Image: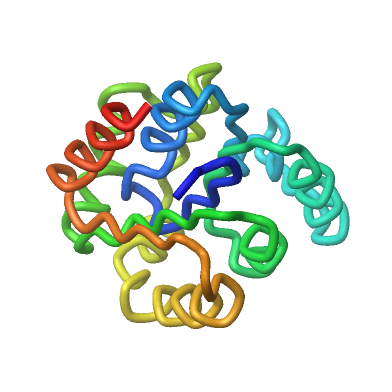
Length: 170
């Protein structure tokens, strides 16, 4: 199946941004990290209606890779995509992801697409994602992405292998 419009979802620290950058490169498609749309330089969020409008503008392109969970506006991306990539790693791997990202990149926003700010709310969100948020995301995928390609990546190793398969298919 051809991948032209890819929505990448999953917990913080699961590898969404890495997969988005790699897919964008492999597919020659523009990449948007939703954190960069949602937050300004001082970490102020966009109002919900402006955030959804910004996504509606992004999805009008014929090719894109967009990473970010943002469950309140997930329907916008799921309805428009042809492929959903669910970064479905275990909680320990996602927690390791947020802490190792902090060690690699430091805090703040970076031109590489890293938007890193660890505080208790982020840790709690990641620690409870599989129990609290994952069922909601899966329900939306089931409802809004029926008939579309849905890829579940459950480990860093599976992610590497899948990206190698995508590269080999190009």
